[in-house]
Image 1: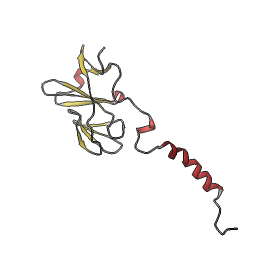
Image 2: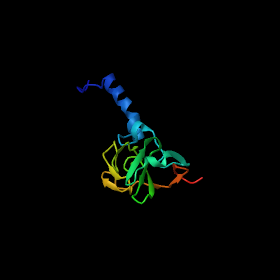
Image 3: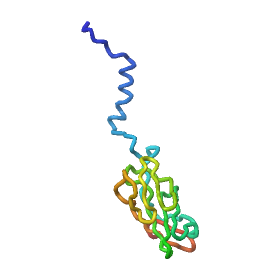
Image 4: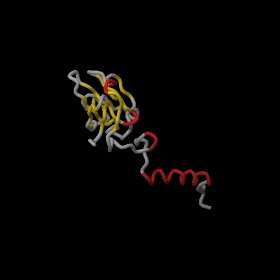
Length: 141
């Protein structure tokens, strides 16, 4: 005997259980739930009544990963709400500030610009239009 303790069955099994995660390069910085969500709608999406977005304010549409803002002159803007840092869906809007739950990045919902890191890239702007009193985001028909 060499005098070195041999690895126990438990130690070997524990190491084997960790191997697949390491081999796949999985990290804690991925989308919530491990599900990849498209950053932008791939078809027109009816978001709801146009009147839901106040002048000078914004509304978050969590189910569609979109935020829509309205300037004082009535101009509408929309942005994807998939964080550009780690692709987490943003689920919080305070006034016109979007807050990512994963690492705390913050974005201006009226411009898409980063106002707090770790994100460094603005949110992508999306086409948005009012159509028959409804808001429609995404590519045209």
